[in-house]
Image (cartoon, one colour):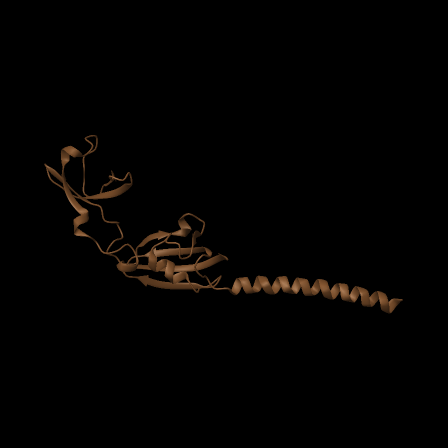
Amino acid sequence: MRTHSKGFFGIQLMTILSIGLLGLSQAMADDQAAVKKGDMVSLHYTGTLDDGSVFDTSTKRNEPLKFTAGSGQVIPGFDQAVVGMKKGEEKKFTLQPSDAYGDRKPEMTQTVPRKHLPQDHEPKPGMTLVMGTADGRQVPAVITEVTPENVTLDLNHPLAGKALTFDIKIVEISH
């Protein structure tokens, strides 16, 4: 009787251990799986300019950036850089303007008469205004020059024309 019971419990225990090990090996495989298009990725990052100044970081928000890889939710070069990375992996890379916010476009700078701007604030170089587009979007415009008659507005993205360096660490990958 003793052998039979031991055998039965031994089989049951081996089955439980096997199921547990399969679950553990699946979890380990998930941890080692690389990011691919369509995966939800959570990561921490710090972005710097050529002079070393930080233009953005996830640590300010105290939570990781989350996006779907390959979906176009982030700039193209950033999206491409995370593909193939694994959970816990860290990487530092620099994106040229063509893989980030593009080159600066002179046609995105326009001079407008001061009378077309709100009269309740004195315009100054460096100020940002929000401009409405014909299709209803709102875009920031930076004042670059002020004369008694006109104001020059730059509608380029503030990071256009700049190389961007990122330090990233993958926190989570959901397949």
